[in-house]
Length: 263
Ligand SMILES: Nc1ncnc2c1ncn2[C@@H]1O[C@H](COP(=O)(O)OP(=O)(O)OP(=O)(O)O)[C@@H](O)[C@H]1O
Image (cartoon, rainbow, N blue to C red; front, side, top):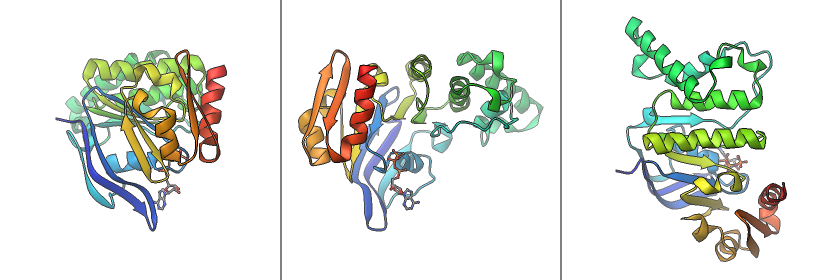
């Protein structure tokens, strides 16, 4: 049974169609990268999967229902004055789960929260106010928050944003480890494919109401991206990196991918 299944899915806001006719099955343990320029509907797709945004037409189903989802929202640096402790942030990931009630429930919650913090190597700073932690430490705790409910599906919205290379690696390896060990399906929204390219099974690429789904080789080539963007786009492989060179709509993508490749 697929972890995520979309059939004939369409999302539009008024006249604006973000995507239409989307058929997608994501299997347990699969790593799907979701790419596309700003405003192409990547975050909206996450919101549909979370049950926060109804489809305009078509169907969506998540094995185990919405409770089976671990979510890493698009990252915002937490305010320095935020006094919430790291472990409290992680335990928010258990809200709505059945371990909420009674003494036994509380003990179970603590065990799970400790295990999730341990699994991201965050024990040393879990009792500190999150506002005082570094971006990398905060992001590890967000991963722990997503893991603590034992998810069958992980939705990760730009989880590497504003992390340095070392922390990008740590965070993507934590997510990869989870899907390998627990067969968790991963949807990973990113503007930068290269840092996760070795992990990616398939890519969903959204542009201007159109989309392509396939392996990185099937999608990240000049022909396919030129069709999607409806303008000539050149895709070049340099060692193990993919460079997208084009005009107009893909300027930003080009900037990100080339900047990454030369760094
Ligand atoms: N509830 C809403 N009502 C109307 N328009 C919306 C709503 N939610 C999102 N949009 C619009 O839909 C488009 C897609 O937004 P979305 O956040 O899904 O894009 P995205 O691909 O995640 O973009 P980014 O890369 O900038 O995060 C945007 O133009 C946004 O303004």
